[in-house]
Length: 285
Image 1 (cartoon, one colour):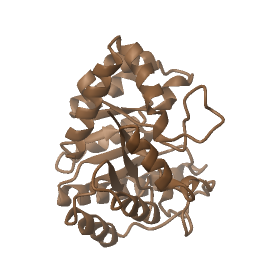
Image 2 (cartoon, helix red, strand yellow):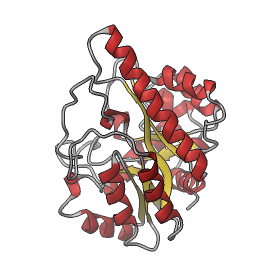
Image 3 (cartoon, one colour):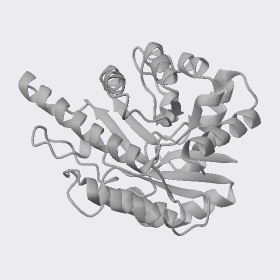
Image 4 (cartoon, helix red, strand yellow):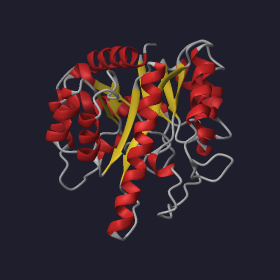
């Protein structure tokens, strides 16, 4: 079996057929964890998970690019947004209540995420950039506090900000989670080693098929121990070849697994077994 540890069937891209896709995945022995990016998508992930006894789980949190900062205009993504404006202020109590309702009702909320830092969209002036980064840091620390209070692992999102995230985790050891994943990893091998030193898992998805300047994905795969690899699609994004023109789904997870198995020089069955065990370990499922 496989576990897609980072899916977004809770996004608008799947508004019409999310349950149909879930059913196909479960029949194909693929479990999935749907990740929240704001309150509405977090709530939707919980609603989907609660329809099933096992195999479908939810993660709740506020993605850094969805934080209302008033400092930068972010391009809206119609595939993601649910039923309200994209940016929001973080309401600790509201997210805590959403998580607790479901932790106490079958354990379908399995982590806080995706949370972290994202410097892709940023203000132009240095003063505004500094304030922008500070607001993201404050949001991150609030959500790490929530994860610690609820004793939940963390799904980290980080784009163009790995060293800042690593530094924050070093400076705030009391909030650093014992269990976490660096989702959709795109960074240097040195930064990879620092995440591994924290004991974190590394999430790998369809981005490993792409050519990104300065990033050697084969080396990243080789440098990540098998017992620390998680498979993910990040669907509806990052569709692997030969389906780039189509919407990604957890059904494509096997193509990512094949690519990783080749780079690690291990049998596909061994990779599937190891990554499934890793996912169950991280999310306690």
